[in-house]
Length: 296
Image (cartoon, rainbow, N blue to C red; front, side):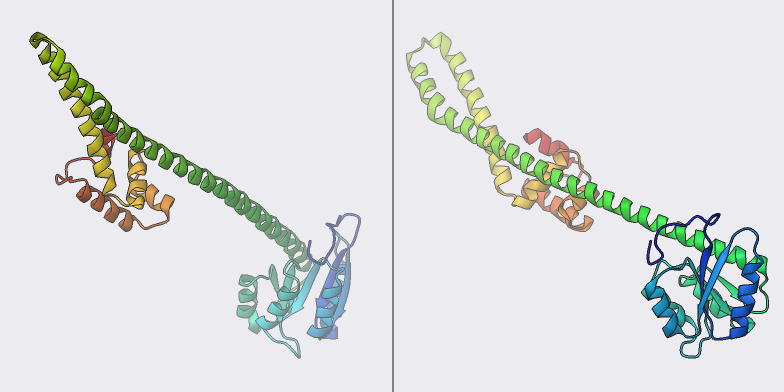
């Protein structure tokens, strides 16, 4: 709520208007206009210098500020900046002469809620401008808070997703390593355990069964050879390339991979080219994902 305290009920409590204006006549005129208002009650207090005004703003107790941009010790947008730096949540209506309308418009662009031109203000216009400034600032604050809350929720969800992605990467890496270990074990068992048994069988069986034994032996050697080929292929790849291979096998696009590992699309493409080269894929028509899945 800034320095103004809790929201106030305009039907029961006067709207507290604070004015920084060095011209006593202008202060008196604004006070008369506010006293004529019928839609709401207003209570006006004022200061004649920016320094005194900033002290009052620091103390709080106001709902909206009427700010003259042509003060003796401060002029133009610097006056607005000084106020906004002290209390960014304070609704501000700038007051300026006819010749300074461009400055007033710039002030609205830089954070004021509305502007009034001296000599062109009546009670109705003044009251409308003040009430509009309060509501507009209230909406701005609500939108800012909603945006901050949304960004916080997005950041929290992004953080959770990143944590899940890291865990998923670790799981996929572990699965890939387990597959490689299993293939290595299969090839080793065939060579060290089954092949010696096959050799003994070949020596002991009758000739009519020898063909079956040889077929079985060839089948085992093909299984061992396939496992070793996969191990040989993956042994040529770097850890990052193996990580990218796993993502490709899981259907991730180049753009999605780039986001996951925090690299550019171009770098992912270079990795894909290196993977194809190391795996001996010379035909550009061969789909890399299909090839990797065939290895698995």
